[in-house]
Length: 85
Image (tube, rainbow, N blue to C red; front, side):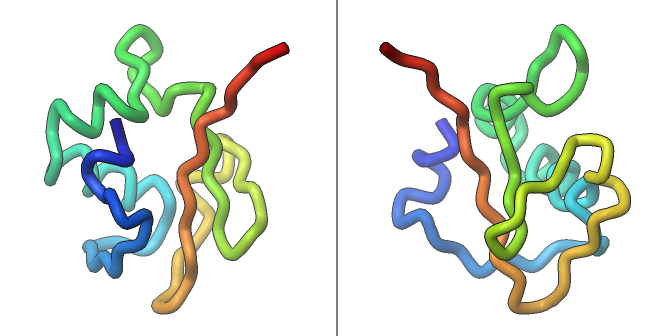
Protein backbone atom coordinates (compact mmCIF):
# COMPACT_ATOMS: atom_id res chain seq x y z
CA UNK A 1 0.00 0.00 0.00
CA UNK A 2 1.10 3.54 -0.66
CA UNK A 3 0.42 4.35 2.99
CA UNK A 4 3.08 1.83 4.02
CA UNK A 5 5.70 3.73 2.04
CA UNK A 6 4.73 7.07 3.56
CA UNK A 7 3.10 6.26 6.92
CA UNK A 8 2.97 9.82 8.20
CA UNK A 9 1.17 10.84 4.96
CA UNK A 10 3.63 13.65 4.50
CA UNK A 11 6.90 13.63 2.70
CA UNK A 12 9.16 16.21 1.24
CA UNK A 13 10.25 14.53 -1.97
CA UNK A 14 12.79 15.63 -4.55
CA UNK A 15 12.81 14.10 -8.02
CA UNK A 16 14.10 14.87 -11.47
CA UNK A 17 11.43 16.25 -13.72
CA UNK A 18 8.57 18.64 -13.17
CA UNK A 19 5.27 16.90 -14.02
CA UNK A 20 2.91 14.41 -12.41
CA UNK A 21 4.04 11.86 -15.00
CA UNK A 22 7.68 12.44 -14.01
CA UNK A 23 6.77 12.00 -10.34
CA UNK A 24 4.94 8.72 -10.94
CA UNK A 25 7.85 7.37 -13.03
CA UNK A 26 10.32 8.40 -10.34
CA UNK A 27 8.26 6.71 -7.60
CA UNK A 28 8.07 3.52 -9.71
CA UNK A 29 11.83 3.55 -10.23
CA UNK A 30 12.64 4.27 -6.59
CA UNK A 31 10.12 1.97 -4.89
CA UNK A 32 9.70 -0.68 -7.61
CA UNK A 33 7.16 -3.41 -6.95
CA UNK A 34 5.85 -1.81 -3.77
CA UNK A 35 4.63 1.28 -5.58
CA UNK A 36 3.34 -0.76 -8.50
CA UNK A 37 1.19 -2.79 -6.10
CA UNK A 38 -0.22 0.43 -4.68
CA UNK A 39 -0.95 2.66 -7.66
CA UNK A 40 -0.14 0.80 -10.89
CA UNK A 41 -2.49 -1.29 -13.04
CA UNK A 42 -0.38 -3.82 -14.93
CA UNK A 43 -3.23 -4.72 -17.30
CA UNK A 44 -3.27 -1.21 -18.78
CA UNK A 45 0.36 -0.37 -17.93
CA UNK A 46 -0.77 2.84 -16.31
CA UNK A 47 -1.92 4.41 -13.09
CA UNK A 48 -4.74 2.45 -11.47
CA UNK A 49 -8.02 4.13 -12.40
CA UNK A 50 -9.13 4.10 -8.76
CA UNK A 51 -6.21 6.38 -7.87
CA UNK A 52 -6.80 10.11 -8.22
CA UNK A 53 -4.10 12.75 -7.89
CA UNK A 54 -4.55 16.23 -6.50
CA UNK A 55 -2.10 19.11 -6.76
CA UNK A 56 -2.78 21.91 -4.31
CA UNK A 57 -6.35 20.70 -3.71
CA UNK A 58 -7.24 20.45 -7.41
CA UNK A 59 -7.83 17.12 -9.10
CA UNK A 60 -5.65 16.42 -12.12
CA UNK A 61 -7.11 14.31 -14.93
CA UNK A 62 -5.01 11.38 -16.13
CA UNK A 63 -4.80 13.01 -19.57
CA UNK A 64 -2.95 15.95 -17.97
CA UNK A 65 -0.34 13.97 -15.98
CA UNK A 66 2.39 14.61 -18.53
CA UNK A 67 1.54 18.31 -18.74
CA UNK A 68 0.63 19.23 -15.14
CA UNK A 69 3.70 20.90 -13.68
CA UNK A 70 4.71 20.51 -10.07
CA UNK A 71 6.64 23.36 -8.49
CA UNK A 72 8.65 23.50 -5.27
CA UNK A 73 6.20 23.75 -2.39
CA UNK A 74 3.25 22.20 -4.24
CA UNK A 75 1.27 19.60 -2.32
CA UNK A 76 0.55 16.39 -4.21
CA UNK A 77 -1.95 13.86 -2.87
CA UNK A 78 -2.66 10.35 -4.10
CA UNK A 79 -6.21 9.31 -3.26
CA UNK A 80 -7.80 5.92 -3.79
CA UNK A 81 -11.46 6.05 -4.69
CA UNK A 82 -13.58 3.73 -2.56
CA UNK A 83 -17.09 2.48 -3.08
CA UNK A 84 -19.45 1.42 -0.40
CA UNK A 85 -22.99 1.32 0.60
